[in-house]
Image 1 (cartoon, rainbow, N blue to C red):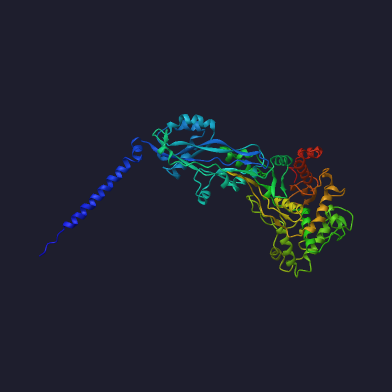
Image 2 (image 1 turned 30 degrees about the horizontal axis):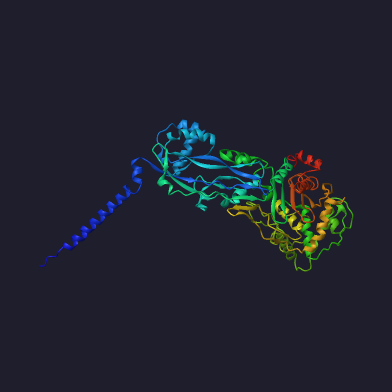
Length: 606
């Protein structure tokens, strides 16, 4: 019987043992000689990865005035797994929190991770940090992360600038740039241009001893990365005009939107009541936010872009333009009016009759525009009321109503221009006529617009048929200097020729003795405007006014709405005229009008 030889196998086994042994020897050599981890362990040192947060970009107004800057602040971070015995009460006194608050914060940190750093207390001031830094060695597991706080040079444009707050878990899930404790733009410009303003984070790897003291950079900083500061930006707001508008709107509810017609750049975006943006900075932010949120006047609401109103008589301008474009109206067309006795829509006052388009705009004659609207809806070029109405609605949408501009203005509302199907559902298909929806002829009924949309429409008229989408960003400052932001021109689909009689009539609204806003005219400045008095089912009428100036080569177009205040000529028109005077001349000569507005209080008028 032949015996098998296992000699060859023993060589294989011996070879495997040698290879495994050599691998262990090499590994131990790597761990103990070239690498620093053995040294760190031997000296009870640890590595700490410190995020190098970049300063957020600065924000300037259109004239180069600084609006938002940064101020140093410090976050207290904690690694729960590294905590040892320490005087808890002493630390609470240093950082000025209660013992119960301390325990709650520590419990939250432990839930996040016992071995990863997390935010324990945010935004410690420079003064408090100076004292904490002297004692920090006593609190193993705690360390300080340098940050910056947003600061504001003034108390204006809170809604436009927005504010910065701590990221939520949803925001972290959406963008892996962020980690727990990071800050992010929550509203306004801070939100719209977060990716520009935030910059790029860096990291610094440091060696820390058992007493929580930094021993230096790991591997001489070869693993560190440098943060990149956020981009500085220039916004379109004129801070002086913005501040003046906010002064005029004190003790009033409403808004002012002013736009440069030739660019769509927003010059002022005033909402009232407002608040000081510095209230939403630092550790007091949550307390102040809760107080503002509970205020019955709702100062957190940006009425300029979120307030929706019936436009009232300002909408008559669009109806006139549509009728001219559809060839159902000419500048010479005359309709009669019997004043308040007229039916089905009465006029607010008696005036010359019959009257043509020019005087109808100047007197804001309701019956004239009801009959104009009826001619649009009964246009024989369309086979049904629904078809004619749908065409009317297309014009309104093209003029910027019932839609969002989708530029850089967060949280804007679209308002409402109801589709024909809405009336089918309410009245039944083929069971509604021009008479059914007659309120639309004078800017009432289902129409809802924002002040931003009204100001943009004023730009359309100022430009004789086109506009640039309203926006807030003017320049981005990069390494090669400012980069101007431009938007593509849009048209309202109304021929230029039809704007001539409209502009002439709007000029006489302010300049002619019988114009509805004649008392707010400015010598040597041709203002084109249209008053509106908006019926308000919840109280006193709203005062509205749209305008642009000067008539030739307009520099500013704007819309003003003052809630619960009455006629458009009483409050909105003088506010608009003062804004125009301030922007075009730099000073106010009609001080009697200014004094009346600055000393008025309309908050209790309902």
